[in-house]
Length: 146
Image 1 (cartoon, rainbow, N blue to C red):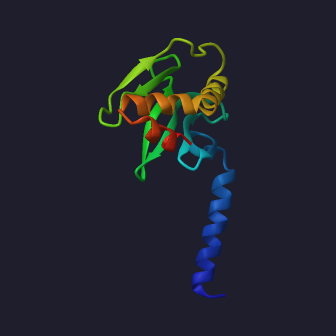
Image 2: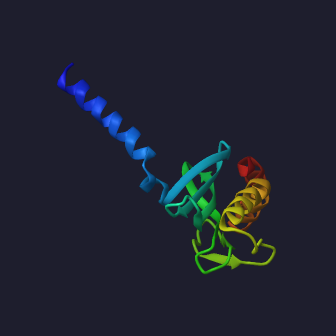
Image 3: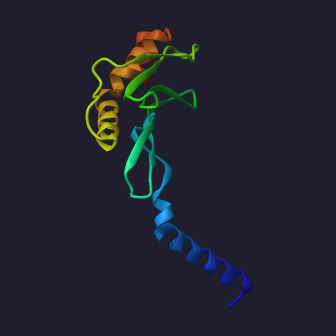
């Protein structure tokens, strides 16, 4: 066996053992999935050793505008309760915080699932409002909606 193959095999063995150890169950984890070609949901959360989710760091809706991914809506519970941040426009990166109509009770895992479901069901409305605030024309909004 060549030196390169031995190094590769030992690295693969290291990866397998490091992913099965208990300490890999803690930390900050992030994943994303696509709702359509130009829309994706990103979720970032924190886990402790037991595998329990302790914090929703961010659940965001990212849209692709002119080959750039822009976050237009995100949920977090950094300040103690789940709330939504809505970006004002493409030019203005500041956001407004909304907590009305957002689930507050339940485990952090349930709140994470609720935020993902809300963005998945309402992403067209969030995107339409954002594009209107950004002064996109109606034809451009329809073109960029899906």
